[in-house]
Amino acid sequence: MTDTSKPMILVVDDQPDNIILVTHAIRDLYSIKAATSGEKALKIATTIPEITLILLDVIMPEMDGYETCRRLKENPLTSHIPVIFVSAMDTLEHVVSGYESGGNDYTFKPIQPLVLRQKIKLAIESTQQLSSVKNEKEMAVSTAMTAMTSSGEQGVVIGFMRKSLSINTVKNLGKHVIDSVSQYNLNSSVQLRTSEGICNVSKDSAMSPLEEEFLTRLKSAGRLGEKGKNFIVNYSNITLLIKNMPVEDDDKRGRLRDHLALLLEAASARLESLVMQEHLINVVDVAKQSLKQIEELQMNHKQNAVGMMDNVLRDLEASFMSYGLTEDQEDKLTDIVSTAVDDAIVNFEEGLKIDEKLRDIVASLERFTDS
Image (cartoon, rainbow, N blue to C red; front, side):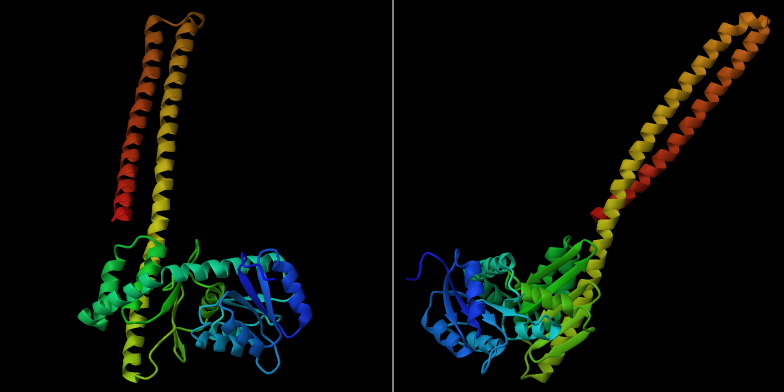
């Protein structure tokens, strides 16, 4: 009897032993349905609405996993079900094929139970999140289309450039890229790369692990590239993937290529400035800390110097009796030491003027980073 309290997973593999291994790895968390071919998987998925996720073998006779996934995504009854490919093939070509056929993630044989369980958990959570924001996305697309009609295609790029100047985080810049591209009625995802790490942003809010891997590999694919409805714009620090470029209208496609290239060039420049601004903020913080330490050291130095001179004067006056000096000689020596103390204090005060100049430099840097 099927446990209806657990999410249902469809395991598809032409080798029963592999189905058994996967079942043992996840049966405590999920109820299991099994199929030994792509055709059987399609039939089960269309007749059992409780299917939550499909673990799909790639290499199968008659219909392989990629073709099975394509058919699942083409059918309105099953297009929403996330698919995780299970394969022994770990090459770029297989990852690209999995992405293009509509898969959500890829895991490799031999199965690692902990990795598999985590991937299933993330895929289900991502699907649930996408479902919950569907109405919001549709409203956003409608609003974006209205804005595009009123401002024109070039206005999207100009609007992006204007607003990007006020954006101060890498993630918000990525969101701004996605929102601007959406005004062309295009579905996209973008990857922004800095020394602090990688930021992936998608129109669908949650990006699948397979799409993240695909974007990472695209960064070395050249400045511009296209295949079917997919279009890629690449800079050293940012990659934009368009998933639904119009293929039926060559003129519109050409215009969009130009607009998207210009938009991403502006995004790349803004990303560089954000990184530089972050570095300057760090420099200012370090400078402020160093200046404070210098001031403390100088104050300690002044106090120590004055104390040392006072000790010298006391020791000198205490030893006058043993030197047999006249009163005039004693006064002369005392004046020499006192003058040296005064000169040291004056020199210290001159050093404080340097500190004031340093503070002015730090203040200027702070005003620059805040602008």
